Every structure is written in structure tokens, then in C-alpha cells.
Length: 498
Image (cartoon, rainbow, N blue to C red; front, side):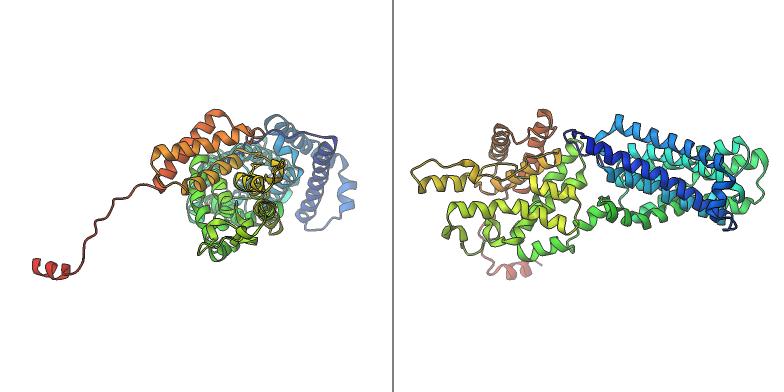
């Protein structure tokens, strides 16, 4: 579901390689333990773990060998396709847990109900909403392969073991269900729509029942048809229950999490409305601009919108020191030295970052909060300091601490934030004036190398400039000058007309 956030490719160290390798080795062991556990459950605990190992050592070795093929292929896939995703061992652990939970749920459906009740699409759905469609399709294929291995080796009492044709057919059903779910559910943000569309995911299973009846006859046709019809809804229901747990465990953000974070009743949004209303109104405008810019260059629009809501959350620490929250013309900076004012203003980026991480808001949002000013100088206080001294003034002392934007979303936030603030100061907000201000904002930041650490192109920057100008001229459009007409006697005239 999420689009990949464009960023510079991360460097790998020996320590990074060791961490990722450890996760893969540990999960090979976890899959073996899961296999043994399901074997015990399948035998109704009539055998012990030792008996399983003693009676069938080659059986287990064959299973492990086949499972390791899938796990190695998974590592190679991410090494070639998305090394940055593989760089964080948490991502791999999340995918392994998704497959392990999906296998456990599938086993329960097979053993206690019927094979056609199995929610084949669950692994693909979870991966789709926590990563992206490309990864979801791949993980769905790996899950289908592991599903066949598990239940070919385990399937004594699951009505599953049969001919090679049956094994292949269920592998195809698993693939088809997951791929169909990825395309059908991609872009669906409503839980109600998820449930409605879940029946579409059942179509491959229904087709499987039909083919099974034609080829060899179905002993329990009613159960098989019911199972096939509800396999999609079961997958979606399981997905809805598991998704919040996965989000919490791995600090990932789905579209549903974005909706919660931008709800005006959420913790920090409510605080901004109450304690920093000027900052909140600024954030709302920036969120609309950022969402449009992200859509225009193919980035994650929901992530951009959410980051915009939270980019200035650090101002909650001292809201009265920021112009948009000041009332009655009282400015506390009038009584402070330029150095102290600078320290207070630039602290809001780091304060917001720490505040969001402390409250378990996803790191990708916190990082944009930290990066949206980059290392830009605060020229107002720098100029003020120069007037107070005859010597040289170090501009770095009056600059934000960075880092510079590391992603395109952070670059969008930097441009949208500064452009909106600059446009507010204009008396003439015609398209020409707004365009000139936005271009100056971007050019100043390019001259100071603010976009050097993210993979944004000149073409994308041009698109962003045009999008920002379109949005700002739409927000601050000219209005008709209303005539000064007295309302005295107007009511009588209207009654007379009637």
C-alpha cells in the first residue's frame, strides 16, 4: 500500500551484515520450532518433541532444506531489489513474523475446519499495508511455497495430503488469492470497503472447488463451497485484527495509522489546536500543499500529509515564542538576545523529534520533523546580532542543526513550510508574486546545498514549485471587494417587493 520513500542508498557495515544474517538464522530455527509444534498439535500431543526428532530425522532435515531455499531466495531478492529495506533487520523480522502467523492461522483452518477456509491472502494483505505492493506479491509467493511445504509434511490429518496435482493446485490457489488481494485492496483505506471487497479474494478458492469437483468429485461440497466463499472475509478479518499489533511491534505506519495520527482528536493535534492554534492552522495548509506535491512526483501522499501535521509539533514546548501564536502584538524575542532567540527557535525541530519518538510515533515522521529546516540560517537573528557587534558573527551559530533532508518527503516539507510562511507576509498575493517568492525559497535552499543528501531531481523540484504556487494562489486567492451598502431600510424594501 505504501509507496517507497525515495532516499539515498544506505551504506552497509560488517555490523549491519551480522545483524541481518542473525535475523535470518534465528528465523530458520523459528520455522523449525513452528513445524515441530504443529506436528505435535497435528498428532493431538500423542507424541513428544523427542519422538518427532528421533522417529523422523531425515524428514525434518528435508523440511528444513526446502524451507531454507525459500529463506535464501528471500535474502537474495532484497539484496538485488531493495537493499535499504534489508538493511534494517526489523523489516526482515516483520516479514518472517507475518509468514509465521499466517502459517499458524492456515494450519488451524485446515485441521479444525477445512482446507478451503484457509485465508491464503493474509500474508499478502499484511505485507501490502505495511510495505508496498511489490514486496507484498513476493512475500505472498514465499508464503505460498512455505504453506505447501508445511502442509505436505504435516498433512496427515488435514485432508490435504494427496496427489502432486493437488499440491500444485493449492500452491496456485495461494498465489492467485494473494496477488488478487494485492491488486484489489491496493488504495483501499476504508475498513467497510475492505470487508465488501474481501469476497472478491474468495474467487480463486471458489474456482478451486469447481475444478476439484470436475476432476475428482468433492466429498463435502457444501463445506468446501462455504469455506471457499468465506476465505476472503476470514483473511481480511484476520488482517484487521493483526495489523495494529504489527504496527505497534515494528513501529510501522499503515493508511489506518495515518488516519489516526491526523484525526483532530489525536493527542498532539488536539494539543496544537488548544495551545498553538496558529501553528495548527499553518500545519493544515502545509499538509494540503505537501500532499499535492507528493502526489505530483509519485511519493507517498498520506505520509507527506501526516508529516506536515507533525512537522512543527516541537513548538508545543514554547508556543508563545513563535509568531503565528503571538497575540496582541507581544513578542517575547524583543526582550532576548539574538543568540538566545535562535536557540529557542531552532530547538523546535529537535524537540519535536524527541517528543514524537518518546510517544512511539513512527520514526519516519519524527525524522521529517528533525530535517524540515535542514541547516538553514535564521537570517533575521543573524542580522540582528550583526547590528549588536562590531566583530565577525559566525553564521553557523544562527543556523538550524540539521540534518539536511534525507528523503523527497522531507524536501517537500522544507519547501512547502517555508513557502507558506513567506507567502503570508505578502500584501500582493497574485500568482506572479507568489511564484517569485516560492522560486526564491527553493533557490536559496539549493544554493546552500539543502537538497544534496536526498535523491530529488531538478525536474521534480520544478514540479514541486508549480504545485506549491498553484496551491498557495488557490488558498490566498483574490476576493471581490464588497460594496459598502447600508442595510437600514433594506428589510422594508424587501417586504415591499414581496
